[in-house]
Image 1 (cartoon, rainbow over the protein chains, first blue to last red):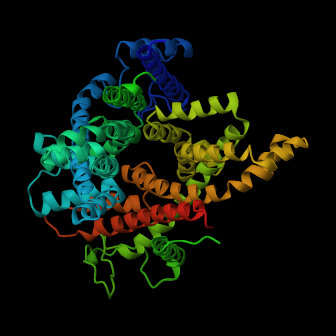
Image 2: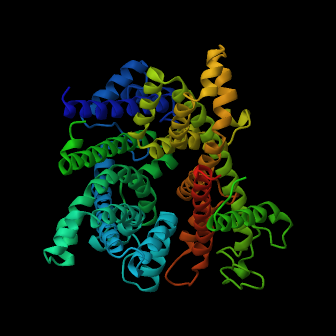
Image 3: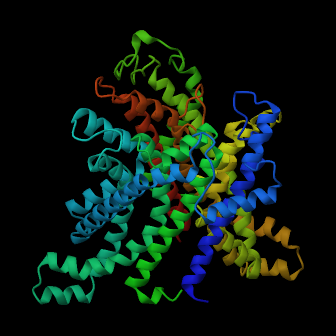
Length: 304
Length: 285
């Protein structure tokens, strides 16, 4: 079968499975969406139930939910009255995507530069600094890292905003808090691979031709360290997805992570369900993108 | 006898000290961790006198809170890792020993789980299961117990993979083939020959799962979905610290010290796990 189709099929199947399981759990929970603090009269309750099709058989309810999902309509939110889940998520998505892009940028930029810098002189000062720095950012939980970043850069120095999502400056600290732990892991991968490449014949030949060190690192070493980098991005995307839940919370960014956590606390299960499905889709897409990039870097990997 | 390198010994020493502190906290000369004393709110660490590590916004002693937090964080971490182990180990051992089609399907299931954002799904599950807290309370289960199942569901896959690799190797070992030859049933081979040989793997995987579970507990408590308020855990302390931090009052210790306790514990567990793995896999043991 066409690998593209197979991949797409697996992606769609995962999303549908997560949706179906989550749907059953939400419908099976004893607390219904109409159990608010206010007692409803039986007539009002029946009218609301028939409006939201809650009185229909489970199979019909699921069919409706599935049809909605295919059209991008995830139903009404239980907490934000009068607003659809899709609208809430659509409002949060750009913020979360910007944060995710910032985190990946930080991870790639710091990870590759630091890794190559460390590989230049193994055992040198730079190598030591990069390796200790990497252990440090990988060891500190990201909510502590984010909190300390706010304390220092926002409260002590006053350089960066501590919360909200006004403009690009509001994304600097969150992106660093999200991306640095992954930059630490990436720098290790790049360092290991860079050391192998630097010890190879190609680099010796390039040195013999009198090329500058920067030129060698940029054009001879960097391209060949990218396969592990691309392979790392898939798992890193999953990790960042988790990380973004806390980072959005710390910086009060109105992304899907904040909505999701709030929904879990507010018992807004339709919103939580929608966010779970959206996260599954995003994770699949990120893993896919990482595989496509890997296949472009090394065509031998593409046939799988 | 396991011979550890110096770094692992230091890590082990730190963990033992933290564990003893957590166990003995009730008999240490520290104030009650939930005793409000608003007149002492946000006193900085005095290092040698009381309050050694300062106080929080309600004047509660931070040293006492960190040690009481260690009790919950470490015990949750330990039990959660055990649950992950109890799922992952049999799964991997059976898949590796049976081989063939069973192995393919069981491992394909693990692969499929990696396509799902598990942390999000588990958060979702924890939220939904809140609806059943009346029913659960009647059989003596609380939120903390849910957490163990959640962690088990999250972290068993790496253990299963390692256990499978070991079991694949063992099933070709002469003593296993011999007992198969005399007609021993699969279940007794698994229990008497495969599992005992997985013991060192178990030790390593337990140590390596621990920091992930401790971090997960802190993460969930930080989000407000884990340990609940009168109880203290490091995640709760980090959350309170972050809420207290503000540009007007200098109170760095309120976030930095619980953060330090958590970070050092995670690093020590990771280091000990790596050290154990090296010590147990080196040929000269």
